[in-house]
Amino acid sequence: MTEIPAGFQPLREVKGYIGLSGPFFRRQDEDGREVYGFLSDDRHGNPNGVLHGAAILTFVDTMLGHAVVSATGRTCATISLTSQFVAGVPTGSWISGRAEIRRLTKSLVFLDAEASCDDKLLLTATAIFRLF
Image (cartoon, rainbow, N blue to C red):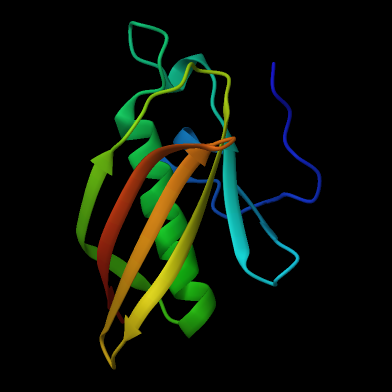
């Protein structure tokens, strides 16, 4: 079984749906950028033993929201999340992701994200979040 890589700390969110889906983790890379991750297990899989797309998408949505709150200090909600599934991996894999804010207005945040396993790209996404 894969282990959580060194330096990753759990996100605060442990209640509700995020708590059921995670735990999710984050750390800063050598450039000071946030890297997110989670260790998938059997509950994240589909009947074929492959990581379910909804598990990856939940991780990415959570990661994006966390990136918005970290950058703005404001609460937010997902308005739009468009994803492209690129590849699959077996359950038990460590999934990592990055979010990048493309544009920030008074009430909206536009972002891009990727999720991967090792060097294998799993999903790309674009999102719009509403700031409160």
